[in-house]
Amino acid sequence: MDKELIRILHVEDDEIDRQLVKRILVGCSRPIEFNIESVNRMSAAIERLDNRDYDIALLDLGLPDTSGIESVQMVKRADPNIPIVVLTGTGDEEIGLLAIKNGAMEYLSKGMALEELLVRTILYALERKKAEMKIKETVEIKSEFISMVSHELRTPLTAIKEGIAIVLDEAAGEINDDQKELLDIAKRNVDRLARLINDVLDFQKLSAGKMRFDMQEKDINEIVKEVHKTMVCLAKEKGLDFSFKAEESLPKVSFDSDKITQVLTNLVNNAIKFTEKGSINISTNDGENKILVSVSDTGCGIEQEDLPKVFRQFEQLAKGGARKTGGTGLGLAISKEIIEQHRGKIWTESEIDKGTTFHFVLPVKERRKAWRRKS
Amino acid sequence: MAKKILIVDDEPDVLKVAMFRLKKAGYEILTALDGQTALSSIRNEKPDLILLDLRLPVLDGPEVCKQVKNNEELKQIPIILFTATTDTTAAVEAEGLEADDYIIKPFEPEELFEKVKNIIG
Image 1 (cartoon, helix red, strand yellow):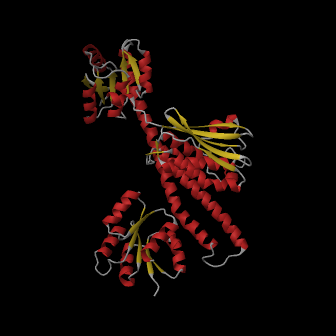
Image 2 (cartoon, rainbow over the protein chains, first blue to last red):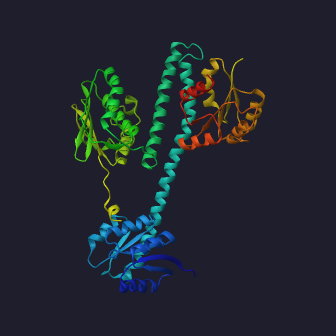
Image 3 (cartoon, chains in turn brown, yellow):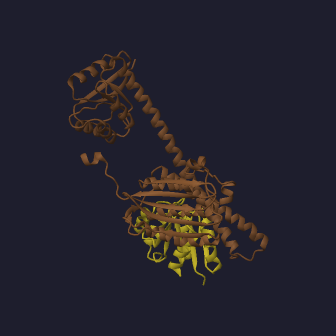
């Protein structure tokens, strides 16, 4: 009978521990052949991972050239897909759990009954990895599918949209009032469909990390001012006051102007939509190491229990939903992705019948990660 | 004589609709659904502008573009390329093929209108 072959990279500097692991695996009674390669330094482990394929890594956390969680992170960087089983010193539960939080599959304390646990843990980690990869693949197929479908929908829609526009403009001959009314409805709905498709594509790209960001250091007030200028008319049409209170001399932050403009436009649009009387206000403020932008309204407000839902996809809280507001249900989900990919945060506060405020912060300086400084 | 615009696309609806206003303004709009038909139409009709999709049946867009630009008699005919790829690769492609301009699909009709007006006035 053919034995299953499992290739193991064992990263361990202690000779006795190394021999122990080897003895257990070689002496295993299951129909498995373990091919064990041992190295005693992280540098050597990374070199091996760069050049060879392994099924799994067994990792000691007390190496001479790295230690603790950093070891897990370094192996992950060298091979993002390799399952890692961490071996910790006796009674070091905390570091083991931390290793799992950092992407290790499982940890074993050297004090445990390794004879029984080691093989089982390795097999379990391999199976779990397989399942994880399968899920990842499914998610990728799904998101590619969405992106393809949305793209395919856009082309025929362009033809329909322009066809309607030409007839409505009477460029193809005069039309009567009934025809005009019907075409106006068709146009409005085609526009909504186009927005929906664009939003789905946008959201898909953002959440798959495929959206490109053109980051530039700028004064946020410049683009807030721009958004205020373009949207003040829309607010006025509804009889709302729209003010902009800028904190002068804000530190510059790094952001993609188009994307942040998209977020601001979305927030202001929502504010106008859900406010029947009163005012809308945008303000900018200097926070510590970050800048804060707030959009507040005196609108209908959001129930406390509904607040966590507002950033979810296709969540329409308003009665009548999309039909009443003309929204796609993706605006805030897209805004959240955009802000988070700027390493910022977005949240909301609201009181029924008093109004709602959306805040977001953008970090002034990207904080360097500790491991980067060290390596 | 009316200026002629040749649309080469296997799915020409979008382009046809987009060019409707030009047709009304007196331009003659011709269409070809594949590269081979396009080439013979170009030789026979000598259009004033070619709107050329890169992906075509029988003979693909880049080949049509090359044949036009390598032909002494035809090479002065301006070509606008249509492509579904990203911005930068499209620009590079258009330059390599000596096309006069390019548009990325899906596009807004006004965008096409502007480019056409810029080229043939």
